[in-house]
Length: 135
Image 1: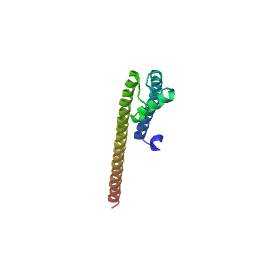
Image 2: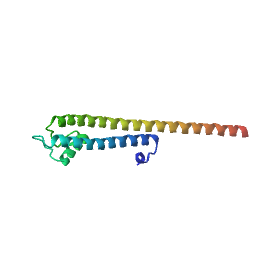
Image 3: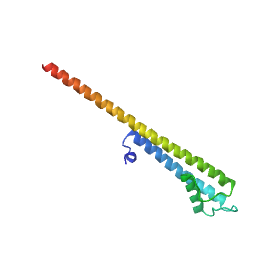
């Protein structure tokens, strides 16, 4: 929930990255579904005969790097390779985004601890000065 609300800058940054990946993947899925449908539907030996088959193929390729059908055309085969590269890139980007998120949270925690320690030290110095002035 903290990521969705943008509890801190690190949360906002992660949320923005995740949303960008989601929206780009949805748009790419729609575009690739149409390309696969129009390039595969009349090809001999194809397993893609309608928009649902094209959508299922495109979505499974984009999300799991495995397909439920094999393309019969060269366009479909090139798209299948593109899907695989895209899926690997998204997984690497997500891993990097989460790594950066946890690194930033760690830095923020260290900064808070240092600030609290500095505040305690300043309060202790002030208390000693008050005790010394009163004696």
